[in-house]
Image: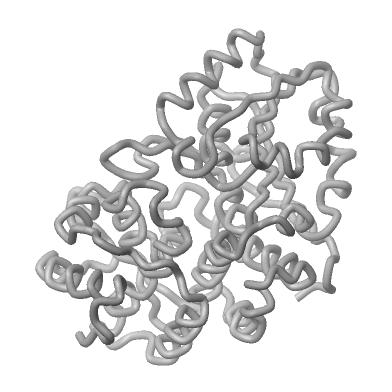
Length: 375
């Protein structure tokens, strides 16, 4: 791990070029000269939500001064932003403001703002360049990195989207200071996901420092965000469009997304849903005789994380959402399961009848209606 508060810089190389990433206290100042050149003489569209703009908007003033013109775009906070209606409003606003093919868009906010902003940038005039300035831990460790963009449909999460890599990701640790513990918990769930299958050293660090991280200790959050981002970069460079190894990053997301959809987007935080999704995936791994070394440690870490509980969710609605999962293929839904700490498998086939029988019991356990869950 790096020294506390040290800015880490590293690239993500992809088929269309390279994303420059900086993480840590002072990341924005580190990248400012390059960002200034990127927007010089350009029309900059700055997309954010009211709360983030009120808390941190002034920190972008040095960049605003470098652009030829700035148009402030506003969207909703959270998953409510990721709709076709919101995307359409942004496209219309950008067209009315005179956006051109060489205009720039900066997504300044959490993962939902980044997902929406990347999708809007990737489709406006068949694609303009954009950058990510994530202000939540979840976005800094995962959502802002790797080029995935998307919006939701009533039938499921992220069902419409495209791969559009940002030119820059600015993971400024100072922006994390205002996060409530619920947001920190969601970001740490994604970091645990990354560590469990990709970085055993990061997993040990999370075990050691979890309570400090939940308390918002900036000296510890920056290096964790950088380590998780580096782990993701290694996988994305090998498999930029999720045809093989990148599927490991969906650990916990298969059931997690189904729970989010069944509960109504926004009523359960994404990181909380992912945490429960990881526990469900561990049950499936145990059926295979896998992950004996990881299971007790992951369960213990997630117990300490104490994610929000999914309550009053219909098992039938969850199972229906699983069948519509965007990762499903004609042959069925493949699961991401751990084999051991630091190693996982993707596209693992699990009989539908096993899932149908296990999901109702698991949801009762997750809701706190039963104290244990035996296979």
